[in-house]
Image 1 (cartoon, helix red, strand yellow):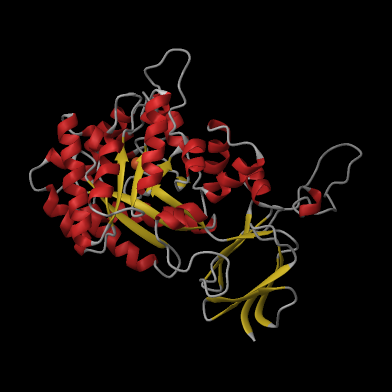
Image 2: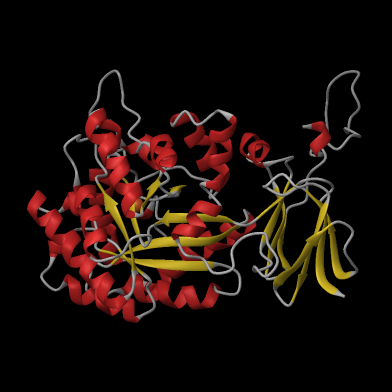
Length: 429
Ligand code: FE2
């Protein structure tokens, strides 16, 4: 007797008509006609996917839009940082906690069950860091929260920043962050990468730096991050986030850089919505898109994820906590609209970020955690097309969120008031 079975599922790898059985929190078997189980869910041929993963987010700032009238009117990164610098020193533990937990509820409802959050450690009191370290433990039964020590105002914004990085690693943070392009000089930027990577190597932590988040073709902090990855033997554990300058680099250098990153095992995380909004604010026309070169990185064998970065905060005034939005926007903005590209966009919000975060037991396979999402879509490309509703969200073999599909009611002359056919059935899509 299994604990739970999801029947008649289509899997992201193309298998159809299979049942997924869970026992003791793990996937026990995937095959046709399994059973019985205490709880049974009929997927009716719809897509069942592993959970969505957001590998770049700012949980300490989310939902802070409107705090003391905060709204980024210029749409620039600089105004976002200035607004955050104004409100952050006044935020209380209760305020951090309230916003983070409200956001996490929304995330779970959307099948987003793993988040890597950068946490600002500029203020030496570390109130946000302590609060999020507590929340990480509290939400662990339903969401994997991975925390990044992030000196938002720069590693050199105060002399004892290295001590704060080590302190938050002691609190359970797993990743060392940075923002080298924001340091006072390029030399400081490179020195910050060296110092932070050395702390990560000493403590066995991963690295994920905000890197070259500007429109300057000569912003090349990423090459130092690649070098330090190789020098310290950190390949596979280092990520360059944003990397928007790659959009504006000349093709010769960008081609060389793509190969260097892939060869060194440096991952790339793009934030398509936030950076389409923030970048090229000083362009007239044509306006650059300001996204790293995802198709080229993917072709070179680098691991590429798409992430949200922000939802309703001083940087970005929109966002719906939906990872399918990120895949959908990136598909357009990066010209990933051939079949292989669209499929890669789905992987970039599921498998790829799970790999970057080194999530244990992720995926739909016997022995993995019984974590999955039933989507009202026929397949991964269809899920992107529709930003499909998530009817069931399952964690450790238990349904933790359900969204019933509403039957549409029509008021069109001569048409039935309620559609009898199931518009969300794969055959209708
Ligand atoms: Fe960010």
